[in-house]
Length: 96
Image (cartoon, rainbow, N blue to C red; front, side, top):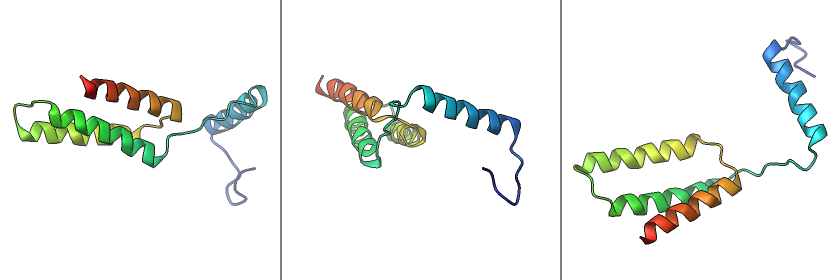
């Protein structure tokens, strides 16, 4: 059901709702668990440790990298599995 004040849905919204419901019906175990804020913070901590050991031509370029990574991770809708894979990957890089 949509809002009683404005009962019309855009066609793209209607199709999205129907496809979502069909997906749920055909894949009842497809619950996706998303990465928490804490897991994203752990990922960023690992990235920042790598950046701190990486040489840049200027301090500003290093700070820019930190900001870019923070924005990318913040905007992304990572699943727990993806977050753990990235955390593991950056830990391996950090060890080298």
